Image (cartoon, rainbow, N blue to C red; front, side, top):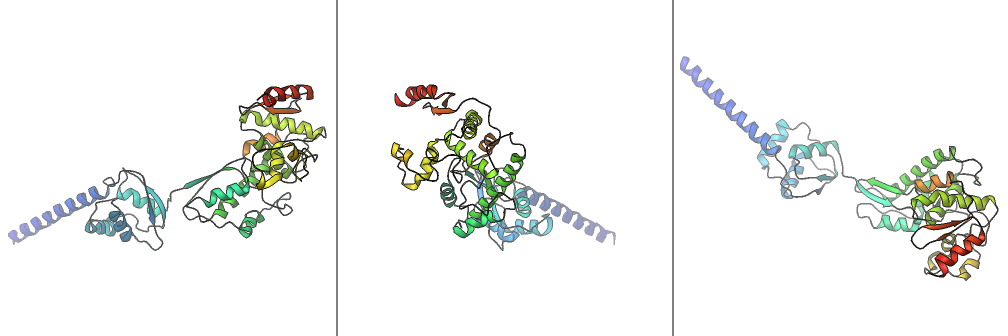
Length: 339
């Protein structure tokens, strides 16, 4: 009887040792770094499960965990096996445990698209159409839907088109997001930002509502790429509007010409009436001429006090500002005619 007990204890001990060794082996394999040399995008299709995911990782060379070890780990030791479909970034140094934690949490990789200030809506649409990770669904119907959800008095039922109604910024998204959703987010971001900024605007601005602020901000975006000049250029435009002077800004003329503009603005262009030609019309054009970012909107609502009524490009991206027509004409001769 004693011998039988000893044998049973020995067998139990050996089994415990084997089990412990197996657990240590499995733990070592699933916690070892992935067998990849660089960051890699990994997509789990809808309907994927943990076993299929492990096989997919193995087939793509991301892990050398055998099917048996993987199945034992998933069945008895993995904390969660409910993987979620999506596209993920897996990296060297991560383990099988690490990536399964990412898959079960659904921490998808975020792609980015930069919708740049100063560009037009048509240029933004072209940018979105070229982004492979987006589902491009932009047409007249979806474009209208991106602003139809607005619940504010000044926007957007009475505007003829969507130019300027989105906030220039970088937007992050998961693979398979619709392009129209990006524009919807950009529109909501614009409404949120300008509604708050409008409440703290400078006093006595010649702007009737936030939409006019967007129009002015779009012109500021097109006039300068120098951040330090935005609020000063805004100050000049505000002075001209308050003085009932025409804005006389070339970007509005170019926008009014449309797609036929060949890059060379002429005197004929400046004299040809369009709703956007601020050499002909007084006040602001009827709509924004480009997309604006936060800095330009802030400049339009908080212009820098100045006596200047004129500015001219110096050829290096910056401008020469003048308070009198005589000084302005001299600056034109210096920086434009001679050049």
